[in-house]
Image (cartoon, rainbow, N blue to C red):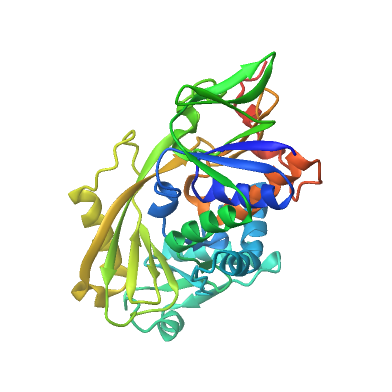
Length: 368
């Protein structure tokens, strides 16, 4: 039986493990703490490629393909794990408060409509008809009804449980480095013991560049801190995802509203700061003034794996036996299903669902 070691037990590593075991591989996930305890649990769970898109291209196609996988993926996880994941077809309003933002929304809606996607430009009154608690100062909004959400903390627990139930093993420990013999990666050094496998998949997110022997310069993937805060309401004041200047609001079915997120380069420091919380709370009240009276709940910060071109690194490493699945920045939850499909196709010799060329590590090599 072909074997694989996966470095990293977040949503990326666990989803890859699930698919590889289903494809007939013997899989072990190596995680230094609780699976999903880092960026996967610190996210908001938005599945929003239409709102996030800067334009057409390979990355947009990758995100859209992964979003399309989510309804079946969510059902599968619930069936295998016996846990709920709260996949909600929320839709998303990208709110404009000035003419410049409204024009940008108009342009985004136009090119997405040309692609046949569901997108619409609403004026302020129509947006408030959809969400009555939306600020009266909103001039309009782009409406993306197919951008949805999932509870990221629930889905991380479910996918780790699903991976275990289909046969993936979990090992807790510190990966000291990748082990190479005769020009091929043959395993990892786990707390001083060499664990061997036919394939090693590096899916350690922000920490991928710190794995000794991996072909990643620590500057290729940097930690981007994102601070978050939860507001508690008795009844959810709105149902759709709301995106505005400086952040977004994600309403959960139980009345919580997740407010995110800052974008800071502070190394590996995960502190929540007064300034960060102030910015998030101001953003939330500007979008939905009724939140002014909401109770402030949990607040936290996570480290997202940032690359300079904001594209993930997916593909074979420069040394045979190593595969990379990292650098997903703020799209790790969204891109887990398609990344797992890509890794599985590569390791089993199947046709990949998308072209990997734009996401390979060698795009960072200097010309010549």
